[in-house]
Length: 258
Image (tube, rainbow, N blue to C red):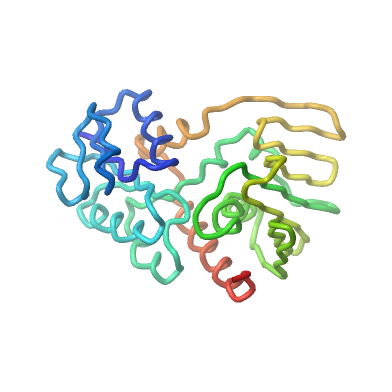
């Protein structure tokens, strides 16, 4: 049995190398024939695949995630979809009920997650990326922090501002105020949560308390996530969190800059 990887772009290639490290038998698929790596069966359309498939990972343009995932979920094949899994909550609802569906939550495998907590006073989050992704920085980058915030409770957005390329979302989680700032192509990339005197550095996998390093643990988060998916031990709640993320982002769409 094989693992089918659909999409060999930036994120797809990251999945490819992890699957290679894990020694999985692969089938690759991408609409661009130049992406053929010559080392595994390759197809330009997932409907052409002939090999027996035990699991599918989908990492393409989000507009195609649902249709590709559904084709395999209907056959009972488990599918891990890269974020965002759809462009709307309504579209995503069409596949939510399938028990084999899972949504990427790579940051959930960080050591920093073990220190997540509601703030007593302040909660500020920064996620500034080097590159550029799909749709907007909010959909591409804040997605991670929104599913992490959901681990703390109900997330309620309040305002969204965009200034000098930085998107800042303010809201509440379980009644506690938070501020989440994201940006593409930032000169000082970082991924940090500031919870009162606690700093969770997701980029460096470090935790600081009152300026003192208390934990540092480098993890191969993507590998851990893929292993969980292939073992059948991946968090099923990822689907509901993804749906809530989509609904939240849609509620803010009227405030997006053109």
